[in-house]
Image (cartoon, rainbow, N blue to C red; front, side, top):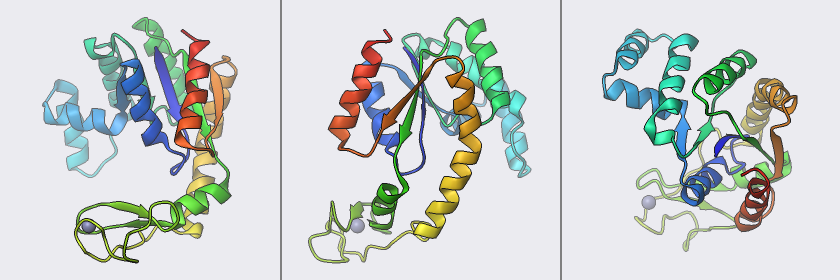
Length: 216
Ligand SMILES: [Zn+2]
């Protein structure tokens, strides 16, 4: 099964990606990880990409697209893949369509996680992190035992600088501006499944599983 997952930060993309790869035995592919992997293995494409990155330049689309082709066509994706964070533009979506046709591994479904800004605001502005051990808390849903103090290591927990409503609004605007056209592209192909991501993790994942039942 070949899937694509989309959703704004705070919608639970990480959580559901993890559950999907576990339950369906498919490979999680994010372009960031893919780039790092190719660079660290010093593959031909990795070396070219490293050269751009070392000069502080963006890795060109052609290189990323070639990596996507090699990765999605590889043995590790024989049982399916879950693409995360790609494609970001219509051009990449068109390119990806050609790639997946060429390798015979077309996308079966595009899962779009949807959640209102009020809920994202609660999730994000209530988040506290421990700068020392990385533990994540939430003032309402997962509070520290002693207010403001990490349960694990006793350090003072902090609110990340960009975990504010203002930053959230900026990120959401950016997200919609970039992804709506890409979602439209897949909607034309009848692949989009919109998922209400405002309930509990269990409920939401059950809905996802129902949707996927009708696909495979
Ligand atoms: Zn800690």
